Image (cartoon, rainbow, N blue to C red):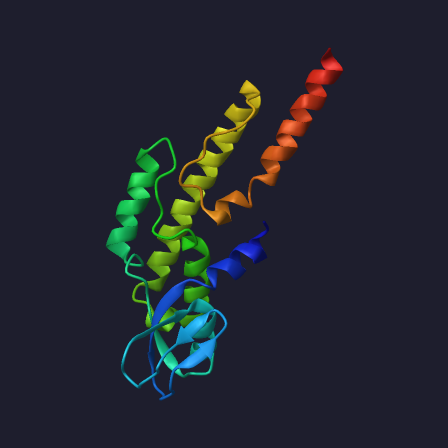
Length: 174
């Protein structure tokens, strides 16, 4: 799965908006949305929230976990543990990117949030590299990976390449 596919899946995640328009419930294949009333919060998929925000039809509310204090705790916990820790959402990185790119004016301390999420991502990538190197060195058939997110998983083609190169080297040395 590449980065674009992961972002596409992330756009299905539900977020809360405060619309500034009225509209009855709309019926879509993926489910019903609305009704939309000015000033009343409503949950919608991220793709719709971004579209409405771009047309200045709503204000986006950040997810509960998108708070500096909560993210600092998550970052510190991720740094302390040797293994991957649970993330607030499987698409935390993609959600952060999309929300901050399209609605940073609705998110308090947006720059700090961007930095904290990037720090968590960097920590997780470093863990993945260490884990991949160990995996290849030990020539294991499979690797245990709890709490991997789809965004992290699209970084694993490098692991497959390393494993292939290791096999070629081992075969040529025999």
